[in-house]
Each structure stands twice: as C-alpha cells, then as structure tokens.
Amino acid sequence: MAFLSRLFKRGDPLAEREEARRQGMRDARRHPLGEFTDPDYQPVYVTEIRARAREQVTEVDQRLAAARTALLERAAGAREVILRELGRGDTRPEPRPSQVNGHAAGDEDAFISIAEARARRAEARRRAVVEEANANVQRARARIEQLSQEWESALIERDHEVEAVHARAEQLIAAYKGGVLEAHPRREEIPSLWKGEVIAMEATGDTPVAISGREEIGRILREVEGRIEVWRAEVMPRELTTESRRRLGPAISADDHPTAEHTGHDHPAQNDSAGPDQDAR
Image 1 (cartoon, rainbow, N blue to C red):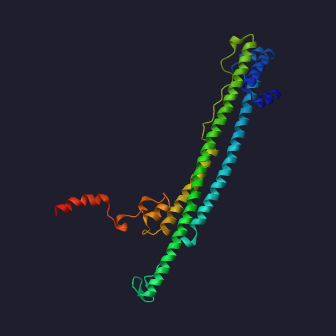
Image 2: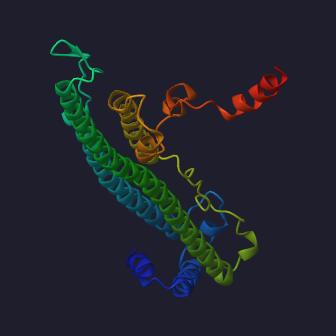
Image 3: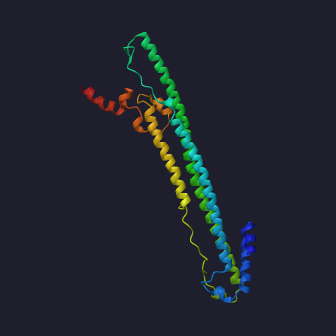
C-alpha cells in the first residue's frame, strides 16, 4: 500500500493516527461487511502494519549486529595491546648471581660493590619498564571494560527502539479500528480483537546477537585478566615495596601484597595481643 509508505515517513504521530483512522473509515465502507465482524479475519491494513513493524525491527537488529562487530574489533585491538605489553622481554627479572669472581655478593670488596650497583641500576630500570607496561595494560583493560558497558547500552537502546516500533504499530492499528467502528453499520458486531491484532514481543536482551556479544567481550576480558595475573607474578618479586605495588594498580590480588614476614613489621593485631602478655611477664 502506497499510503503506508507515506504514513511511516511522516514522523508526526498525530497525523499518522489520523490517516490510519480515515483509512479504517474508507475500508469499512468499501469492504464486505462480514470481513470486519469475523474475529479470524485480519484486515489488509493490519497485515501491512505488522509487516512494516517486522521490517523495522530487522533494521534495528542489523544496526545492533554492526555495532557488535565494531565493538569486538576494538576489544580485540585492546587485547593485542595487552598481549604485546605482557610479552616484553625487558620486564622479566634477570637472575642475580650469588657469586661474582669467586666472592659472595654481600662481601665488601670494591669490585663486587660495583657489580652490585650495576645490578641494582638494571633492576631499577626494569621496574620502571614494568610500571610503564602495566600502565599501558591498565588503559587497554579499561577500554575493554568500557566497550562492555557500551554494548550493554546498545542493547538497552535496541530494546527501546523495538518497544517504540511495536507501540507505534499498536497505535496505528487502534486508530484504524476506531475509523472502522465509526463507519461500519454493524459496529456492535465487530470483535474486540482481530486475528493478528496483538503480537507477542520478543524478550528484551535475549537475542542471539545480544548473548553472543556479551559472551565474546566477557571471554576477552577474562583472558586478559588471567594473563595479567600470571605476568605480574613473573615480573613482580615478593620483595617489591608497597608503594611499587600500589602504582601497579588495584588488580593485584590480596595475596600479592607484602605480609608482615616481608615488610619486617608485625600485624597491628598481633602487637595488641602481645602487649598484655609481655607486661604480665
């Protein structure tokens, strides 16, 4: 129907409903009277409106699929950044020999002290590289999390668009039926619902595209988090200071933080509990 194309292009809800109402009046006068009193009959207008609504929902889902592809490409790019940083050889600690020219590393020999100073400078440079790599990793990981949030927002927007399409179809069909009731001489026999007048909406957020998008981005995030954890265990000795670990970000697990054994400080609770006993002694 050419009038349907004009109708959907207007964009004026009141004008659309008024046009639908007039179409209902015209059809009630032109079509056989029994068509509109039969509950199993679906007026051509209703069929066309439903078909157009399905087309619009398909267009919405095509845009969602395109957004999914773009977001996954960006997530894959962030993943590559993370893997590249985690694979840097200059972040790995070099083994420090316990013997240098037959002397223990802790001896006061001047030559040994120079060697130890060089090793310490190299370790300081390595830790600076680790912090730089970690900063890049954290930014890339944050991008993946942001992309996950953008995907959820895209799903919400998709659901709103689909709901709007169905609501528009319902309004037009209701206006059309109002026109039929105005003009039909046997309006009291017109059923409350025609065939196809009510359509079940698809459950929001459960489309295959939505599910696959969540799974893919979630898989990428889990993969990089696992690799980051392994990398940090390899490049961060237990002896690193609390300040160094703090700069490397909150993703460090609680088990990786320095304990009383490594810091040389007792736990406050232990101090409190030990005090009375010592005083008693």
